[in-house]
Length: 119
Image: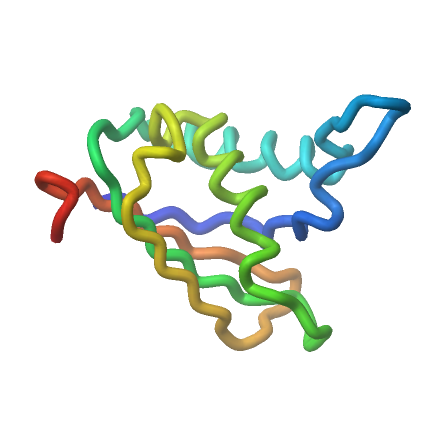
């Protein structure tokens, strides 16, 4: 199992932007990816193989109303891009919890390989 502390991810509402007919990852989304890549590289994380369980705890930066499902896309894509796993389709169990607010926000991610797709 690996445990990683990351910045608070951008909402899916701010992760993409439209440029003409194309949809691109926003500047905020790209900056988040760079931070995630940097953290994983500094920890020497190698891609996990096989079915995975991912447990996410998000600590929002303030008390604004947020939907917990809106942070998952940016987070899971950034973890894939940074090399935590080869493809986010490997995730067979995903648990997400919204916790108390902390200044600046943060995210704790635990990734565990499952045997035969089960606990």
